[in-house]
Structures are given as C-alpha cells and as structure tokens.
Image 1: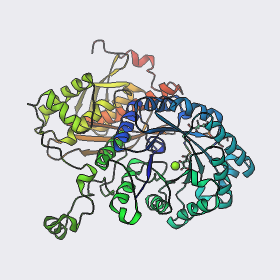
Image 2: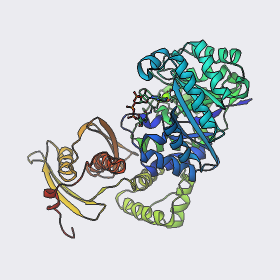
Image 3: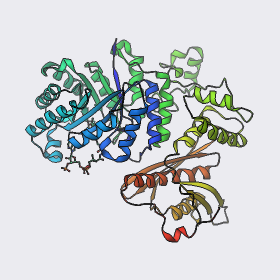
Image 4: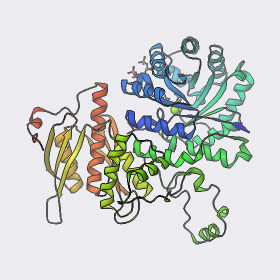
Length: 527
Ligand SMILES: CC(=O)SCCNC(=O)CCNC(=O)[C@H](O)C(C)(C)COP(=O)(O)OP(=O)(O)OC[C@H]1O[C@@H](n2cnc3c(N)ncnc32)[C@H](O)[C@@H]1OP(=O)(O)O
Ligand SMILES: CC(C)C(=O)C(=O)O
Ligand SMILES: [Mg+2]
C-alpha cells in the first residue's frame, strides 16, 4: 500500500481566506494540532509577507517537532532568505519556492518570457538548494501551462536540486482526467523525475479540489497539499479530512493511504473553524454537524439494526466521541479538570490551567452541566485571545425593552492599563454595544456579517457570536462566547477590532486604533 505524504497549508493558503488573520498563539496551536494529526509537512506561512508571518513561522519551526516546517517564497532572493531564516531551526526545514508558468501569468503578471522564467527557476532553485536540502518547487498555474513548457520547467527545477515538484491547479480549472494526465506526461517525459516527489495542489473553484487531488493520487503522486476544512484562497483548497477519509475508506480502490491519526480530525476541524472564524456548514463531509446524523425513519431503523447499513465511516474514527466518563461540574477539582483537558488534547501551563479553571468555575455557576464542547469553547476562548487582546471588556451594561431606546454602557481596559468608558444608543441592543465599542476604540469598521449560535443544547447553552468586519480593504473575522449572547456579541466584535489594532501595531502600517486625546480624557481612574 502506497503512503501519501500530507502537506498541510492551512496556515499559508488557508490563511489567505478573506477575513482570516491568525495570531502567533493561534498559529502555534494549529501547528501543534497538525503535528498531533501526523501530517508530514506544515506550510507555516509566507515568511517574507510580513514581520508577523516571519515570527510565526520561526516560532513554529522552533517549537513543533517531528514534522517538516516549510515557508513559501517567491522566486526572489529576498523571499528565500527570509524563508530560510524563519525555518532554519526546524528539525526538518523545507523552503517552497514558486514561479508562475502559464502564458497568462507570465505575460500579464510577471511580464517575463519563457526563457526568463526558466533562467529564474534555475538560479532561484539553485540558490535555495545552497541553503537547505529540502527544496520544493511549484509551477504556479501549472493547470493552464503548456505541457511542453511545464516539462522543461520541471527538468530545470529537478536538475538544480528540487526534491519535490508541485503542480498547482491554482485557479481550480481542470477536470480530474486532465489533471491526472499532467502527472502521467511529467513521469513519461521529464528526465530525473523518478528521483523527486510529485505533489498535487488543487483549488475548489469548480468544486473539484478533492476529486482532482484523488485523481492525482491515482496517477501516482507522492504528496497531496490540503487545508483543514478546505479553507484557502477564494473557494479554498482540497479538504484534508476528505482526502484522508477517502483514502482510508477506499484504500481498496486507491491502493494508497496516509499515516494520519484520524482520531485527531474532529478536533483539528473545530480548532481551525474557531480560530479562523470560518464556520463549517452542517452538511460538510466528515466534519459537518450532520455528517453522522440520521434523520429519516428508514435510515434510523437501519442504523439501529446494523450501523453499516448507512454508515461508511464510524464517528469514533475521526475522534467524534463525547468523552463523558469524566463528568465535570461545579464540584470538580483541578486534577479532574486537567485530566479532562489532556484527554481533549490540550496542554496548558500551570498558570493557564489556573486561569482557565477559574473561568470554568464561573461557567459552572451559570450552567448545570459543562460538556466537552463547552470546555473546548472555554479553553479556546481564554487561551487563543491572549496575544491579540488590545482591549478587554471590564463590564457591560445593556438597557433595552419594547418601549426603551436600546442603550449600552461599556468599560474596556487597554493593555497599558488605562480604562475607557462609553455609552451609546442603537437600533437594537447589539447595535448599541457595537457603537459603544466604536466610540472607545476609534477604529472605523463596517459590519459585514453577524451570527450567533448555541455551542451546545439546552436553555443554559453557551452562545457563540461570530462577526466579520471591514476596515479599508481589509476583512477581519472575530468571535466570542458567553452564556449571555449580548456579552458574546460584544466579545466577538471587540475580538475583530483587537485583531485589526494588533495587526497594524505589529506591522507598523498605520497607527489605527490610537486613542485620540479627547478619548483619553474619558479615562475613568481606577475603574
Ligand atoms: C497562488 C498563491 O497562493 S501565491 C501566494 C499568494 N500569497 C500572498 O501573496 C500573500 C503574501 N504576499 C504579500 O505579502 C505581498 O504580495 C509580498 C510581500 C509577497 C509582495 O508585496 P509587494 O512587493 O508589495 O508586491 P505585490 O504583491 O504588489 O506584487 C507582487 C510582485 O511579485 C511578483 N511576483 C509574483 N509572483 C512571483 C514569484 N513567484 N516570483 C517572483 N516574483 C513574483 C509580481 O510580478 C509583482 O512584481 P512587480 O512588483 O514587479 O510587478
Ligand atoms: C503557491 C502555490 C503552490 C499556490 O498556492 C497555488 O498555485 O495555488
Ligand atoms: Mg494555492
């Protein structure tokens, strides 16, 4: 049985999804989960894109062991140098260099001739090889590249040291047969191709990213590039969970599989959804809320009699179990709490554990039973916000009713310790909250989306709010949870604004969010 390498690009192509802007801590959390899942390569980012991306890739390279850490780089020396500096401390550093090879891209975007592209591939792959041994080259828009030219590009990349040759269907244009045929041609026509790994990278513009990747597996590729929940540029990349389960469930057909720990898939999916703010549709294969639910009578009857009548995958295979042998509630202590978190895959420091335990006790006072989903929401909420929390909510008071003007009063505390209080009226309670936050933060944003849903069932369920805001041309997601949906909404909106402020502070683009002197005067001393 062939083993297919899984190259995960959630943190690079996945992060190119509009609205997604992950902090260091969040990227590290996702990278650790990908390592638990057992992927072979984590593309941790594009080091030359920003100082923030550089630092995140370097941190992942330093901390995440047992897996290859990779950075993307254009075929220019500056990008390659940055990529090298970011990944060099990894146990297995890889640099992923790319250059477009289709006529459309060469003519209009790069403004380079075929000869110039070949020269650039030669010099930049050679240069990258002088820094690291594991070099991957991608011919961007290979899907629309003339096959004779693609063969020439592959030959040059391989001759100069590429160990992996990736064939991206960058715009998700190809059909499965066409995509597989490219790999067959490369294998037949390129000298030296037997010494390198071939890789597939598909986009979902026509809904064919997964089936195209699987067609590539049939055509003999060694590596498939995927993202958790299929996130990525535009319609996204091939979904990791779909490829993994297709290969596992139909290994009889594909004669190929992965070495992933499939029981980590649900957790990876939930983590990525939470941290990116990208909601998984209920009917999504493998990780959607309905993926293992049986609604109709005939199906339920069948499953009750014999699961395999309607289930081709067991939910436990992808880690979908309610781990309830240890039921947590307000009488639980720290040992049980730690044990439960460990069983859910969290590794918290003593300090983090204490803070989260106190939050858990507060939650127990509001909620009769605390389920695994509640705990995951609580830990992710507490843990993931900490490196981009410019302002935190100290208190929130809302007054509304069918005869009253909805009014929100809020006090926020900034990271320098100063407190800011404001009140605002709005069309409704949520609108009033958002306006009060705007008055304090002074970051001009337009609300694009607002959603609220219950994390678990019951009247005392935790509510999770998600927002998407726009600031200039930049789109940002935010989320927040609480047993009170108005507080969850305030947290979600502030989360998005905090991320915009921290992003700008880190990248030193423009001092968005700087409190103007008039606002500073509204500081309430000592709360
Ligand atoms: C298919 C993909 O997913 S590719 C990866 C896409 N991801 C990203 O772009 C995210 C990160 N990107 C960025 O932060 C920025 O685009 C940067 C830092 C890389 C470059 O920023 P800028 O220098 O401002 O250039 P800008 O993005 O406007 O334009 C891209 C330039 O790179 C050139 N370029 C594009 N791809 C490549 C490549 N693979 N190798 C060399 N040059 C390239 C373009 O032709 C253009 O050059 P020009 O300025 O001479 O016209
Ligand atoms: C950089 C490359 C691999 C890419 O993401 C694409 O072409 O889609
Ligand atoms: Mg891509």
